[in-house]
Length: 370
Ligand SMILES: *[C@@H]1O[C@H](CO)[C@@H](O)[C@H](O)[C@H]1NC(C)=O
Ligand SMILES: *[C@@H]1O[C@H](CO)[C@@H](O)[C@H](O)[C@H]1NC(C)=O
Image 1: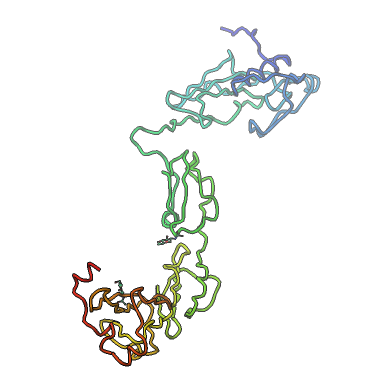
Image 2 (image 1 turned 60 degrees about the vertical axis):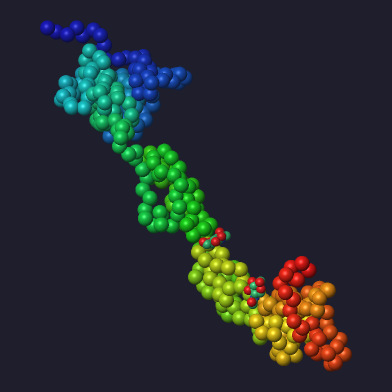
């Protein structure tokens, strides 16, 4: 039974505009207003990846007797043999169903390829329209439908890689899952060079390269008055570097003997002080130093080191007994207690046994009520 030849056979030049709009609707889902007066697009090879286009033309006259000047998609107006057909039926496929949208499979006919349920094209859509071209091929690449990538319930979401050298250098805030950001901070406390934030992209790669931690130095801790810094003088020191301190003669080291440059650029401790000795502010009284009662003139230079306690003897206001009050030497400063009275030269020479430091000590009870 002969097919009625009516319907189209072939589209006219006028039909080209309609075809173009149809294609646009099919491919993009939207209708772009046709502002151009051209009914067929200019030859624009590339989009459809056609290796060859038929000879371009403006009218049938340009094409000789066996061909017509027809709109051939992105090849534009081309000389096409009217009887040309594209392959049909197509071999059955596992992943998609093809369906002709025209009664024939000849030039300019449209073919719908629809993915089977649950499958999608790389574009994310599940349908594509192909057109029968002048070169007897269906337009576009062979569509391939694949299983849609949806996160399966219960399975862990995809992540971006975090290599060991990154996790061992930084503290990472965030889960590194696709579509989220992480924040880096250097474990050493050092400054970050690069972006402190990164984004895990859809394709499981990071938006930026991982940052690095700036090399850490400790600033020079400076001089210690009356002391020596036992280290090469530098403006900055590497992590792990030790600086030792010594004090000049008769100065007492108050603080660490050594400081170390830590990984965060701080010193393990503040530098020490070198503290001065104190002159004992008593001459004609014995004082107690280190548990021993001594005359100040018997002590070298009549001085005690920084931090030493010196116990003075004071007289009870009403009783003939003495009580003791300790004072500390701090960096050259040692004051006698307010109750201490320096004996006069005469008292010292004539009545040495009556000096306050020499009389008997008061009972604890007497001192408490004092
Ligand atoms: C450096 O680290 C030490 C010990 O880890 C810490 O005590 C100190 O506060 C840190 N200094 C700074 C400036 O973070
Ligand atoms: C001095 O006395 C204070 C307070 O009683 C004590 O903490 C310190 O250890 C004493 N210093 C010496 C060198 O005995």
